[in-house]
Image 1 (cartoon, rainbow over the protein chains, first blue to last red):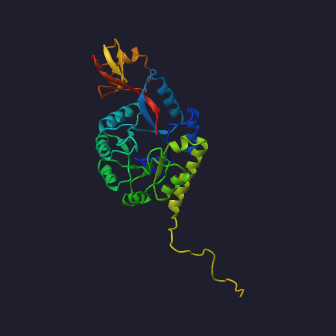
Image 2 (image 1 turned 90 degrees about the horizontal axis):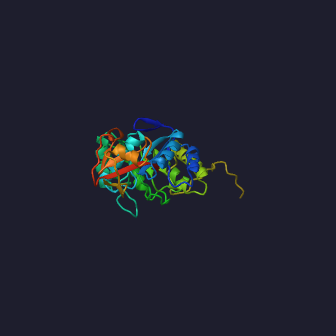
Image 3 (image 1 turned 135 degrees about the vertical axis):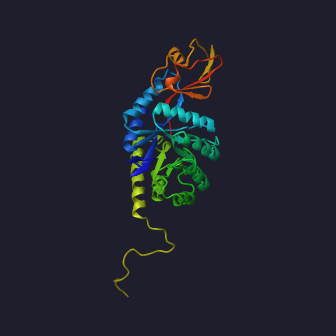
Length: 257
Length: 65
């Protein structure tokens, strides 16, 4: 079973809670996906705490674990402060650490990310860093105290799917014992299955489900794809070959001429 | 006293962070607060004195990816 910071997690699909047509559809999609972990955030509350309270009650009613994020933070200070506030509100030491480095691509500021990860890990947080697929950065994050890594496979919300399979393979190969979760860029269930077949431990996605025509059905499809990809990885997929290889026996062919 | 609360200028009478939340009609155990960029845990809000010009952030759970 998937183990993240000592916790046994039945599902290998982690789901975001944003962008759904309605809270009810979000709740149904989470249930249909089978996800045990959902991501949440903290934002300014303008209506006396009532909006946030309603959302939080709904999430709590679903019986899932929450992984708060530091989405939108562009500096180490912002990310660390947001993480500390999230720890208090959500009563968890888990944090999905995002330090954004570019407004257009939403790619991580990996330098700030490593610094923030070090500060938070030293403060007792269990950090889930949203990072690139860069091998050296991954190593630095582990040095900083992260025990899980969450590389992107394409920009957030782009739905492009894995853009650099070689880099993802390299990460998997270099860190066989570190839980690796592909976070961001997944657009379709086949993308999720592809990275799971490479041996990734889980995928985290949001937009691909929330913005589908039928989010609940898509959540279900992603749940199956993640499971299929995992099972395929464990079953040992065939490697591609340069030449054709007949599958039907050639011995015993009839001769007609 | 003039404060900046969640980025907006406000005139309030509350002398502490706890009193400010009451004055602004905030309720619930799911709020997070910060004063001038530093986190103020819920248990410290009673003793957290406010001064003119302070910047307050009041955050609550929100959907996220």
